[in-house]
Amino acid sequence: MTVQPPTPFPRPQSAPEQVAFDRLELGVILSLYGKMVAAGEWRDYAMSFLRDKAVFSIFRRAAEHPLYRIEKVPALRNRQGLYAVLGMDGQILKRGHDLAVVLRVLERKLIRPID
Image (cartoon, rainbow, N blue to C red; front, side, top):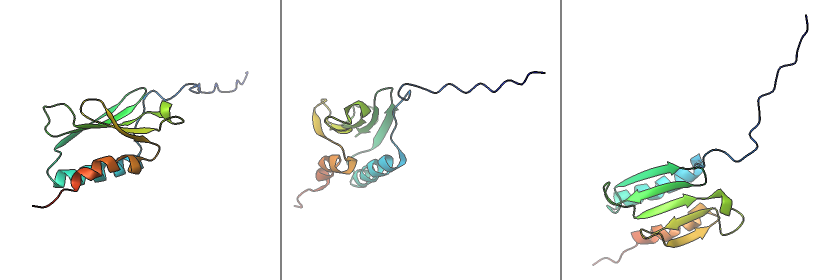
């Protein structure tokens, strides 16, 4: 009787099949989202986890285009920054390496003068 060593599982050599937000990133994003919902600005959100990026889309109403998109693109980690906030028209509002700093561009929407 011959004993053969077990065959090892193949290790993935490439990047993961999809990019996702981790728990800390979602905590920061959902904290801002909760403040804006309480202020009556935002009403719905959607998350997309694609092969090359993760997207958190923010809607005023569920049936329209997203007001803002928060994107995580690992390919840009060493260049412009891992995170970006895009407007409705696709214009990049802020890009950087720290998610909390990038989201400050949206927190400014909460500050309004009182009549």
